[in-house]
Length: 432
Ligand SMILES: [Fe+2]
Picture 1 (cartoon, rainbow, N blue to C red):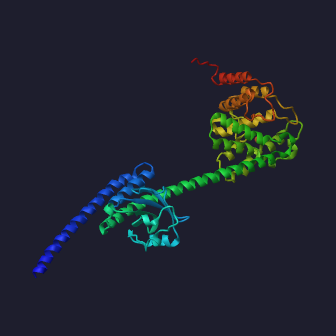
Picture 2 (cartoon, rainbow, N blue to C red):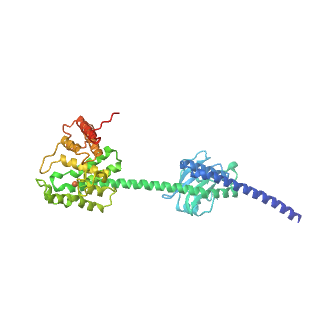
Picture 3 (tube, helix red, strand yellow):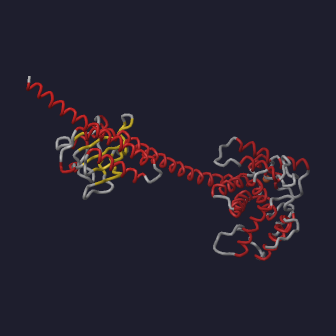
């Protein structure tokens, strides 16, 4: 009885002490969690967050050494994202896993103590870190799926891991697992975006080559228009570049230039070689290349949205005198105005069955004379910038390539630019 009473009191004391200890441990874990929350959601490098999480895990288990691993699925391996306490450990530490290791880590509930007989169950010895460094491993899982692991080394004073320490560790592991998974998903997403960009870049390369071939095919109808679409593509891109458009917009302009006359595939070949100007009926048939071209490209899913508008409207003029819709400058996007200007510039400087090519100087004079009535002043200014670069010379490939700048001097281009500026400011001069 005494024994019984005495034993009951002692057990009760021990029980109360154990409960108090458990309560303190639980409070410490809750405190750690509340400290870890802001750390995990802070806007900073994940390496720092991983280090904070590992410190919390080590502290919860009373360990002095540990490694936080992320699980990589293909090929299966644990890759360290934070280490602490070990005197000498490779960074990153890598442990390749066989399917049986993945299965064992994925199916174990909570942290497990490691011994010589169980190392090979959970970890392989084929990595750059020996599994024997670890005394305990806790898998990190989200919805039953392995996302990482924390492996702990010796404990402070080399004492064995106790049940409460492992329970605190398990509690934190749920939260750490979410953060590790979130990081892995972000990494995967970044990889996918990079892959998509690479794919898009290769597609753009494909489009460029395919459209170049297409542009050549559009212009085979007559020797006088050979190379016209390729040149309009090149001039349009150069004008866009001088205006300050980005690489994608410049690529779109080049492609639009290649395709602007695609409707000409439906025009009678005879009209292209006619040595006199077209009669009204012939002109209408020729003008229809804009609407026919529009019908052709509308059904094609190009990576650039403006192609159909450019094909339809490249003969529109700023004052509404163009065709097919009689739109004014502000009614059409800048890309349309650029291709329209490039088209006119190439047509004027090329031979026609009924006339010789017009000289570069005379062409530019005429274009400036017709601006802003027919053409967009900013586009014309950008064309003059590129022509001036040709006139100055240098190592770059000239805009005009096969047609030289003749005897056009940089000062001649400057004069044209000043005339253009004077016209668009209505003769007003501004003193600075
Ligand atoms: Fe055209």
